[in-house]
Length: 375
Image 1 (cartoon, rainbow, N blue to C red):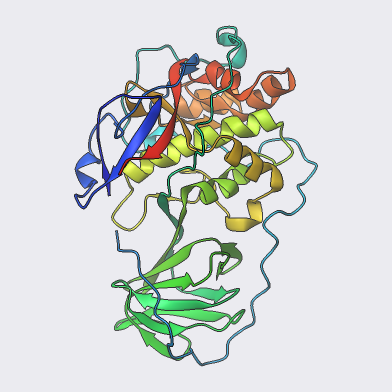
Image 2 (cartoon, rainbow, N blue to C red; image 1 turned 45 degrees about the vertical axis):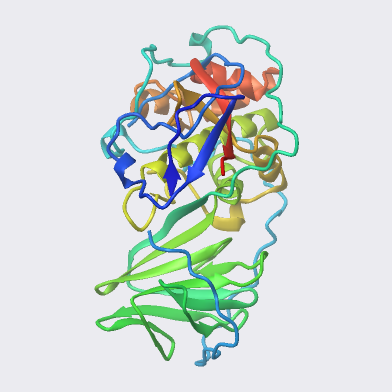
């Protein structure tokens, strides 16, 4: 769980994990972080917008029987990008009426286009701390909601566990197993399982297949009457590899991709602190931010996420819920003119602006900070 600490030091946001629940944070208007010290502020614009335990696999378990459809092999995570250079048609977020309550915002006027913003100020790149590694934060993304069944598979050794982490069955590689909810739990092929289970690879490079996509991390399945909820629990940085490739085309200028990575990381962190419900932090559609698993990962999106590792937008010790959309027009309609235009970010990058200057056009008054864990 995340514990807040308001001490400011050394330009980093320090995060503590404690047994106390973070649900006491959910209704706050401000989204404070643990301990924050802002790096040299860049003229950025702030935007206002508005658990189940981790199972541990057990060895030497009975292998699930019942042959089922063979699922396709995983697509290589770093596939060649499309030459198309325009924002994804799914990249815009929903209108404010569908969004959660607004977080704290400074008193700034909304921008309506890159031209409306102040001329960017040239600044030194954000320094990378020695031996910096971004904190291991797990994000829970609802990838299927209210469905009658799903097809599950794995690309390597994996185990089915219950919510206490007790191993139930192992799964054969590349064997598709249909999961159907019932009155007494879940049915996976011929297996009768509890209504809450995890499918967890036992190797670091393991992937889980859900219907038509492969995902990193592990997958939670929850029976809800005669319907299913499916949640991907994955490391935040790995999640961003896919989000950046889903929200922007991978052939976008690298500085635009870096700006997108920081905006997406800040947005995701707000929802880790203020989750949608007890089962997941946010969804996988444009209602939140688009996430497609490894099929939207590219070399360029890995590079953008890794180059901005741990960087977020912050304001007065809090995290900015950084809204964005495909165009200035959509930003104006959906977010009252407050947010990053992705096509605008492309254009600014092509003019030679770096990612800090791009963010400065859309989030003035906000600073960059970097996350670290505090023991």
